[in-house]
Length: 367
Image (cartoon, rainbow, N blue to C red; front, side, top):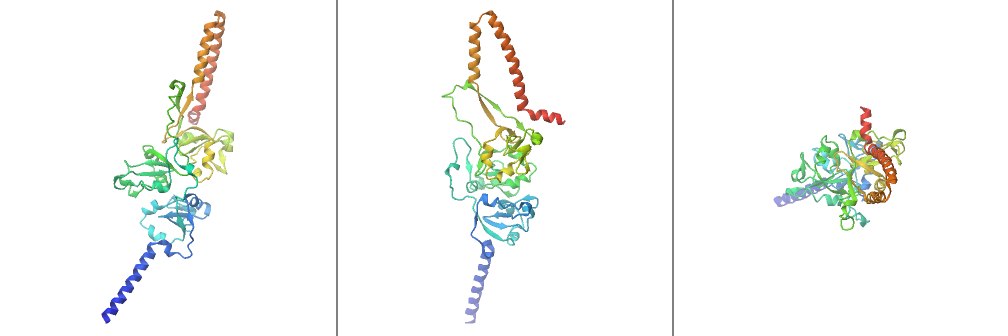
C-alpha cells in the first residue's frame, strides 16, 4: 500500500514538472495580461525605438517590448527595434534567457491575408515575395536558398552551404541587419543573382518584351545610365539649390525639384543612400515612381534605357532628298546650314555629355 501511494505521488510530481517545462518553452504562457494583437511587417516597423520611443522586436513569431533594454532600439551596435530579429537571436548564446525577461506584446504575422491582388507578380517585374514565401527557400539539404537584403531577394544557393553563412542560418530570412554590419556585404551582394523583391518595396523591372514583330530593330538604341560610387553620389547634396540625387535600393533618383536643398521632412537626404529611410515610409513607392532615374549605385545592376531613333532617321532622309533637288547655290547654302547645325549639335552633345557625367567633373574639382 505504501509503495502504491509513493508511486502515485511520483507520477503527480512528474506531471507538475512537465507542465512547468511547457510553460517555460512558450513565452506567451509566462506573461500576464497578454493582448491578442497581431503585428504585420508594417506595424512592427513603427516601433523602432528612435529618440527614446517605444521599441518592439519579433523573434520566432512573438513580439517583445525592448524599450527598456535596447537604447533607441539598438543592441550591440545593431538597429533591431522595429524588425524581425529571429536570425540575430538564433546566433546569440544568451538569447533565450534575455527573451524570458521581456514583456510580450503580441504575435508577429508578416503575411496577413492579401487585400490587393495587384501586388502579385506582373509580366514586367521580377517576382514579389512575402516573408512567408521567402521562408520556403532555406537551402536545407542542398535546396534553393534565398535571402532578402534591403528589399531585394538574392539567390545564395551556390555560396551559402545549406543556407548557412558564418555559422548563421540565413536562408529564407531577411538578412538586412546581418549584412549592414558586414564590411564585405556590398562586394558579396554584387556577385549574387537577383531573383525578386520583397512585398512593400520598389519592384525591379525585367527585360522589356520583344517588340521586333511590330517595330524594326534599327529604330531603337540602348544605352546604360551612369554608375555612381557613394563618394560620387555624395557630391549631389542639393545645398543652396544645386542638383540633389539620392539612392534607393541601388537606383539613383533626381530629387532636385522635390527636396528643397536636398532635405525631406527635416532630414538631409541629398547625396546619400536613403534606402533605410524609404523602407519605413508608407508613401515611398508612389514618390519614387514620380522621380527621374539618373543612374545606378556601384555594386547593383546597371540600368539600360532605350531611345527611339525613328524620327532622327526620317529627318536625315528628308534632308538628303532636299539636297538632291536643289541647285548649286542652294547646295552651298545647305552646306553652310548643315555645318552650323553640326556645330550646334556638337555643342548640344557636349552639354548632354556634361549633364550625364556631371559627377566625374565634380570629383575632379574636389581633387
